[in-house]
Length: 225
Image 1 (cartoon, one colour):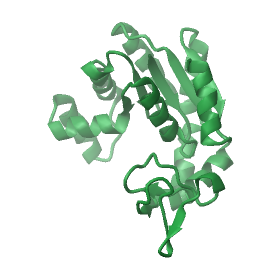
Image 2 (tube, helix red, strand yellow):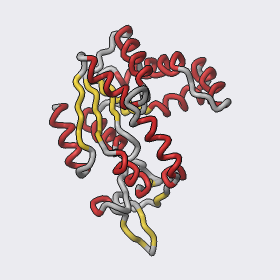
Image 3 (cartoon, helix red, strand yellow):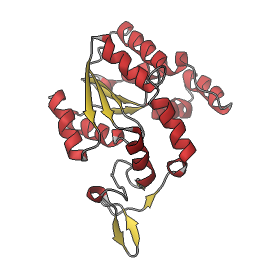
Protein backbone atom coordinates (compact mmCIF):
# COMPACT_ATOMS: atom_id res chain seq x y z
CA UNK A 1 0.00 0.00 0.00
CA UNK A 2 1.10 3.56 -0.76
CA UNK A 3 0.62 6.09 2.04
CA UNK A 4 1.16 9.78 2.74
CA UNK A 5 1.36 10.80 6.40
CA UNK A 6 0.71 14.29 7.74
CA UNK A 7 0.98 15.80 11.20
CA UNK A 8 2.35 18.99 12.75
CA UNK A 9 5.70 19.02 14.49
CA UNK A 10 5.05 17.47 17.89
CA UNK A 11 2.22 15.19 16.74
CA UNK A 12 4.18 11.94 16.94
CA UNK A 13 4.16 11.55 13.17
CA UNK A 14 7.67 10.05 13.08
CA UNK A 15 6.81 7.54 15.80
CA UNK A 16 3.62 6.43 14.07
CA UNK A 17 5.40 6.27 10.73
CA UNK A 18 8.01 3.92 12.18
CA UNK A 19 5.26 1.66 13.58
CA UNK A 20 3.42 1.55 10.25
CA UNK A 21 6.67 0.85 8.39
CA UNK A 22 7.45 -2.09 10.64
CA UNK A 23 3.96 -3.60 10.53
CA UNK A 24 3.54 -3.42 6.76
CA UNK A 25 7.23 -3.80 5.83
CA UNK A 26 7.27 -0.80 3.53
CA UNK A 27 10.03 1.81 3.42
CA UNK A 28 9.47 4.95 5.52
CA UNK A 29 10.62 7.62 3.10
CA UNK A 30 11.42 11.04 4.50
CA UNK A 31 11.78 13.86 2.00
CA UNK A 32 14.88 15.31 3.68
CA UNK A 33 16.68 11.98 3.33
CA UNK A 34 15.97 12.00 -0.41
CA UNK A 35 17.67 15.39 -0.73
CA UNK A 36 20.69 14.26 1.27
CA UNK A 37 21.06 11.06 -0.75
CA UNK A 38 20.88 12.80 -4.12
CA UNK A 39 23.33 15.47 -3.04
CA UNK A 40 25.82 13.01 -1.53
CA UNK A 41 25.68 10.79 -4.61
CA UNK A 42 26.08 13.73 -6.95
CA UNK A 43 23.03 12.99 -9.09
CA UNK A 44 21.97 15.58 -11.64
CA UNK A 45 18.92 16.45 -9.56
CA UNK A 46 21.09 16.54 -6.45
CA UNK A 47 23.50 19.00 -8.05
CA UNK A 48 20.62 21.28 -9.05
CA UNK A 49 19.09 21.05 -5.57
CA UNK A 50 22.41 21.87 -3.92
CA UNK A 51 22.67 25.13 -5.85
CA UNK A 52 19.40 26.31 -4.31
CA UNK A 53 20.22 25.00 -0.84
CA UNK A 54 23.64 26.65 -0.85
CA UNK A 55 21.95 29.97 -1.60
CA UNK A 56 19.45 29.42 1.19
CA UNK A 57 16.58 29.14 -1.28
CA UNK A 58 13.78 26.56 -1.38
CA UNK A 59 14.30 23.81 -3.94
CA UNK A 60 11.68 24.15 -6.71
CA UNK A 61 9.01 21.48 -7.09
CA UNK A 62 10.24 20.58 -10.59
CA UNK A 63 13.42 19.27 -8.93
CA UNK A 64 11.92 17.94 -5.70
CA UNK A 65 9.08 15.89 -7.19
CA UNK A 66 11.23 14.01 -9.76
CA UNK A 67 13.60 13.14 -6.88
CA UNK A 68 10.69 11.74 -4.90
CA UNK A 69 9.26 9.81 -7.85
CA UNK A 70 12.66 8.29 -8.58
CA UNK A 71 12.82 7.10 -4.97
CA UNK A 72 9.31 5.64 -5.09
CA UNK A 73 10.24 3.67 -8.21
CA UNK A 74 13.14 1.88 -6.50
CA UNK A 75 12.89 -1.88 -5.90
CA UNK A 76 12.19 -1.66 -2.16
CA UNK A 77 9.03 0.35 -2.92
CA UNK A 78 7.44 -2.21 -5.24
CA UNK A 79 5.10 -3.44 -2.49
CA UNK A 80 4.33 0.02 -1.13
CA UNK A 81 5.78 3.04 0.60
CA UNK A 82 5.13 5.59 3.34
CA UNK A 83 6.03 9.14 2.34
CA UNK A 84 6.67 11.63 5.15
CA UNK A 85 7.49 15.35 4.96
CA UNK A 86 6.05 16.09 1.54
CA UNK A 87 3.92 17.77 0.28
CA UNK A 88 4.13 20.81 2.54
CA UNK A 89 1.63 23.04 0.74
CA UNK A 90 -1.39 22.91 -1.57
CA UNK A 91 0.53 23.50 -4.80
CA UNK A 92 2.91 20.64 -3.99
CA UNK A 93 -0.05 18.38 -3.21
CA UNK A 94 -1.67 19.14 -6.55
CA UNK A 95 1.60 18.65 -8.43
CA UNK A 96 2.45 15.42 -6.60
CA UNK A 97 -1.02 13.96 -7.21
CA UNK A 98 -0.71 14.69 -10.92
CA UNK A 99 2.82 13.25 -11.08
CA UNK A 100 1.79 10.04 -9.29
CA UNK A 101 -1.14 9.64 -11.67
CA UNK A 102 1.07 10.15 -14.71
CA UNK A 103 3.56 7.60 -13.32
CA UNK A 104 0.78 5.06 -12.78
CA UNK A 105 1.22 5.07 -8.99
CA UNK A 106 -1.94 4.78 -6.93
CA UNK A 107 -2.09 6.62 -3.62
CA UNK A 108 -4.06 4.38 -1.28
CA UNK A 109 -4.19 6.28 2.01
CA UNK A 110 -3.53 9.70 3.49
CA UNK A 111 -3.05 9.65 7.27
CA UNK A 112 -3.63 12.90 9.14
CA UNK A 113 -2.67 13.13 12.82
CA UNK A 114 -4.84 15.94 14.21
CA UNK A 115 -3.46 17.97 17.09
CA UNK A 116 -4.39 21.42 18.43
CA UNK A 117 -1.64 23.93 17.84
CA UNK A 118 -1.08 24.74 21.53
CA UNK A 119 -0.73 21.03 22.37
CA UNK A 120 1.72 20.51 19.52
CA UNK A 121 3.88 23.36 20.82
CA UNK A 122 3.99 21.93 24.35
CA UNK A 123 5.01 18.56 22.98
CA UNK A 124 7.87 20.09 21.02
CA UNK A 125 9.37 22.07 23.90
CA UNK A 126 9.26 19.07 26.24
CA UNK A 127 10.47 16.36 23.92
CA UNK A 128 13.93 14.85 24.14
CA UNK A 129 15.68 13.04 21.31
CA UNK A 130 17.52 9.77 21.84
CA UNK A 131 20.95 9.85 20.25
CA UNK A 132 20.51 6.19 19.25
CA UNK A 133 17.06 6.45 17.65
CA UNK A 134 14.93 9.59 17.21
CA UNK A 135 11.82 7.40 17.16
CA UNK A 136 12.31 6.39 20.81
CA UNK A 137 9.66 8.63 22.44
CA UNK A 138 10.83 10.66 25.43
CA UNK A 139 9.03 13.67 26.87
CA UNK A 140 9.51 15.40 30.19
CA UNK A 141 5.85 16.45 30.45
CA UNK A 142 4.15 13.09 29.90
CA UNK A 143 4.47 10.35 32.49
CA UNK A 144 3.91 7.52 30.00
CA UNK A 145 7.00 8.43 27.99
CA UNK A 146 9.05 10.34 30.57
CA UNK A 147 12.83 9.71 30.41
CA UNK A 148 14.35 7.68 33.23
CA UNK A 149 17.02 8.98 35.60
CA UNK A 150 20.38 7.25 35.68
CA UNK A 151 23.47 8.46 37.54
CA UNK A 152 21.86 11.82 38.11
CA UNK A 153 20.80 12.53 34.55
CA UNK A 154 17.85 11.74 32.32
CA UNK A 155 18.36 9.02 29.70
CA UNK A 156 16.21 7.37 27.05
CA UNK A 157 13.38 5.34 28.56
CA UNK A 158 13.66 2.77 25.75
CA UNK A 159 17.37 2.05 25.38
CA UNK A 160 19.13 4.09 28.11
CA UNK A 161 20.89 6.23 25.53
CA UNK A 162 21.84 9.86 26.00
CA UNK A 163 19.21 12.49 25.26
CA UNK A 164 19.48 15.80 23.47
CA UNK A 165 17.20 18.65 22.44
CA UNK A 166 16.94 20.26 19.04
CA UNK A 167 17.88 23.93 19.29
CA UNK A 168 14.77 24.94 17.35
CA UNK A 169 12.60 22.93 19.76
CA UNK A 170 13.43 25.52 22.41
CA UNK A 171 12.96 28.48 20.09
CA UNK A 172 9.42 29.90 20.23
CA UNK A 173 9.85 31.84 16.99
CA UNK A 174 11.11 28.79 15.12
CA UNK A 175 8.26 26.63 16.43
CA UNK A 176 5.69 29.25 15.50
CA UNK A 177 7.17 29.56 12.00
CA UNK A 178 6.93 25.80 11.40
CA UNK A 179 3.39 25.72 12.75
CA UNK A 180 2.37 28.78 10.72
CA UNK A 181 3.17 26.75 7.61
CA UNK A 182 1.50 23.55 8.78
CA UNK A 183 -1.77 25.02 10.12
CA UNK A 184 -2.32 27.35 7.15
CA UNK A 185 -5.56 26.16 5.53
CA UNK A 186 -5.30 28.52 2.58
CA UNK A 187 -1.96 27.58 1.03
CA UNK A 188 0.00 25.60 3.66
CA UNK A 189 0.15 21.98 4.74
CA UNK A 190 -3.42 21.86 6.02
CA UNK A 191 -4.48 23.08 2.59
CA UNK A 192 -2.60 20.09 1.16
CA UNK A 193 -4.45 17.73 3.52
CA UNK A 194 -7.77 19.28 2.53
CA UNK A 195 -6.87 18.89 -1.14
CA UNK A 196 -6.61 15.13 -0.68
CA UNK A 197 -9.82 15.08 1.35
CA UNK A 198 -11.61 16.73 -1.56
CA UNK A 199 -9.91 14.65 -4.23
CA UNK A 200 -12.30 11.73 -3.81
CA UNK A 201 -9.89 9.05 -5.04
CA UNK A 202 -7.95 8.34 -1.83
CA UNK A 203 -9.05 7.34 1.67
CA UNK A 204 -8.10 9.98 4.23
CA UNK A 205 -7.67 8.69 7.81
CA UNK A 206 -7.88 11.49 10.38
CA UNK A 207 -7.00 10.50 13.94
CA UNK A 208 -6.82 12.45 17.19
CA UNK A 209 -3.16 12.80 18.15
CA UNK A 210 -3.83 13.66 21.83
CA UNK A 211 -4.21 10.13 23.31
CA UNK A 212 -1.31 7.76 24.04
CA UNK A 213 0.96 6.44 21.31
CA UNK A 214 -0.75 3.04 21.57
CA UNK A 215 -4.22 4.55 21.22
CA UNK A 216 -3.24 6.62 18.20
CA UNK A 217 -1.64 3.55 16.61
CA UNK A 218 -4.80 1.50 17.22
CA UNK A 219 -6.96 4.19 15.60
CA UNK A 220 -4.74 4.23 12.51
CA UNK A 221 -4.46 0.47 12.22
CA UNK A 222 -8.23 0.05 12.51
CA UNK A 223 -8.62 2.07 9.31
CA UNK A 224 -5.65 0.49 7.49
CA UNK A 225 -6.54 -3.15 8.23
